[in-house]
Image (cartoon, rainbow, N blue to C red):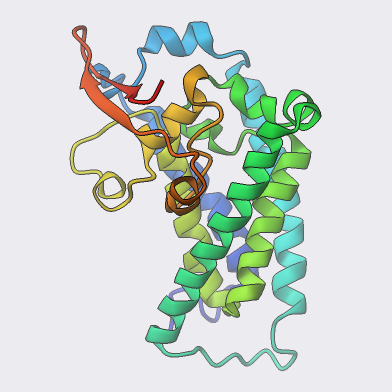
Length: 255
């Protein structure tokens, strides 16, 4: 029994809940005070180094979410039980399905992401749009070229859902969690007590390295684990050091 049962179908919830969660969580970060003592980049760097205005970022994210919503609604509806009655598997099985989906999504995103860096045409015309945010921030987590958004996130999510065999109801949990993790990876803040920093090596600082010039060809893994980076030699270790003027800096430890 879930709180939306009887009001909204699992398919509709699975389609729109991740979008709502994205804006709530990213909006929370956006409304925080500057928090200069916890930033990985100064507010000045954010204004000077980023190559795209905030309004364009918001429009780009909304466009990607529109495409994701259409694909998700079609996918969840066509794979649901025609009778409308869906028996949920045990909690243990759902956890296993979510772990499988995490590994599948990581695998898909690693290889597609890496190829978009290695192929000069794809990087120049598609993936470079995401890297216009040299200093990442939460609302820009899903700021991508529409083609990249479709291939990397939307198709990757669909494959993760299908391979894991999860139901639409389990998908609500998985995709909302994936969205929160992705937003956190781009938030640009190293906050004390952040559970993602405690339990995931692939975190805000890890992905910040990838957005730096020295790290463009490293730390491709997203959004959960650094497995493929470590197995295939694209892992760049880093040191998190305090800046004299306040905040932190993720410095690559590999030349």
